[in-house]
Image 1: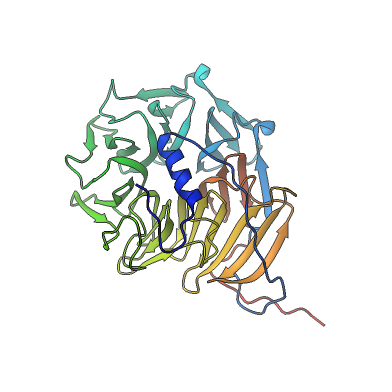
Image 2: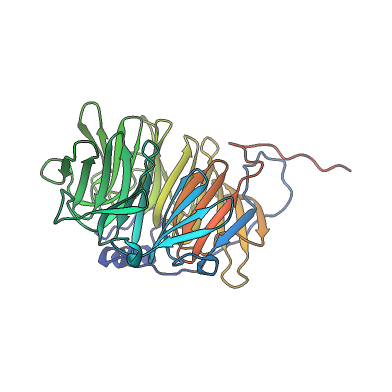
Length: 395
């Protein structure tokens, strides 16, 4: 599946796609900052996160490769390449669990916390599904359950059901009856069965599927809806904003009746009537290669890419904030951009720990970001939605 968009796909994104297709490969990248206009502006601007905290193995994490983050009250659960960790926000204490502690598999690729039961569901990359409850781990795999595959990319809670996105389809487990349901090309509209992401909200489950776009499962009716690029071309995107930007999707996030989608060839938004595609050459998106997406509301979404974080801070005005790390100075930078025009650049002591970002999780006004070189917390003191006009300087 080697597609080149008319909207600026680089050879590098294609190479990375092939690497990820072969396995869980992550390639560090350099950030191209470009030229920025840092002159004072009176235009309305979004909130910019300028205070950051970093957590690494030096602070107690079992590994710096962070695949998933899940916030549950004062606890922040962290899935890493070498085990599960829990950070207490009040005490800053980090506890961790590995295979020697009962974790069935060391690579934790997905997390979902069930607020009703207090259980933590753990997607294991190669090890199946686990539940951490009462200090004990339970384990499901292809041999002892209806889990369709042991390579798990995503987990989501839907009422009494747990959805598991795997490389061979999706499985749905009812925690009360113990019943498993498998969804693949035989009973769901999957042209391909490699499920990359899953989310649940408002009676809808959305699956991001490699080669099948986004599938929407309406829970009350048990019916599927398929979102594909309607021009039918795999190599080029003939008409922009006519549908999903690409059929190889990596992340889905549904909030306020709005679907946000990440792919390896751009990102997009769908409000139920209109699509909007995003590409790096015309927005603040740092790269078309998306690893994940998390929507905060209908007008704000964070895209984790291989070259930093791209944030649609205000959809109506197409205003973005891009967070990156300078690999030479190791300092951070936030660039505010509207369409292709840079409005302001803010230099910071800290930003993301690495430009290869893998996950985003909201925590009130704060935001947690998983990267290939550690965990970051962006502190949102004073956060506001949308745009505000800067206060003029007193003479």
